[in-house]
Image (tube, rainbow, N blue to C red; front, top):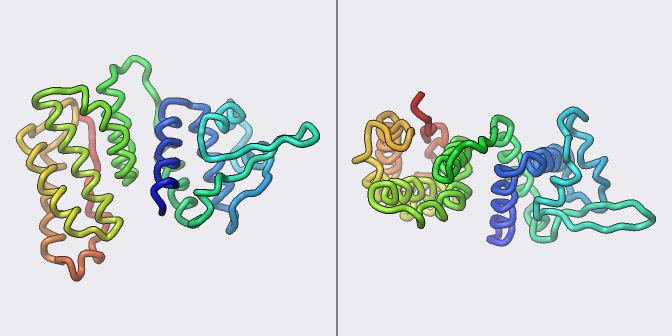
Length: 236
């Protein structure tokens, strides 16, 4: 996937994490695109939202305006949407990413009572557990820049771990190994938990990932199973 498409898609899920209307729209778009083999051209809002029950499409019109994935055209009082060109070059990858987003958003509930740091961490946990690793970087970077000391080091470690798995998905073995090592070194001292996130099991499973990648080596690392990647969990 090209960088422009990747960035646009990431921008859309970050908007959806903040806006319930954008979340509904993104889920509608994912559901629609999953039924087609070619990009949507001149599709009405009604058609885009038809894949979800009416009870789940509240605010969808506003939401479609919030996500930067569609261009709009009006003729004879009828408005239609087309997927922006950068997302159509590799349509299969776009659909796969939208499907991941829809899955991650299904269980996401914003909490207006959370402070900025907690909100960023909750978003990062949701995205990491959906194996949306580039998006974890996008949501944590701004918060990392605002922090100091142990918190700053810990957030940088989480970012590096997420980017390590992003590199792995892009067949960058050296980058994955290097960042996984660096990230582990930053979060390991914060065990058994930090900022409400469980670390003991997380670190242990990351080390298993590290060992598996080292065993496979640069020749066979593509055999690595994503199922080995651990989930992030908040301490109850």
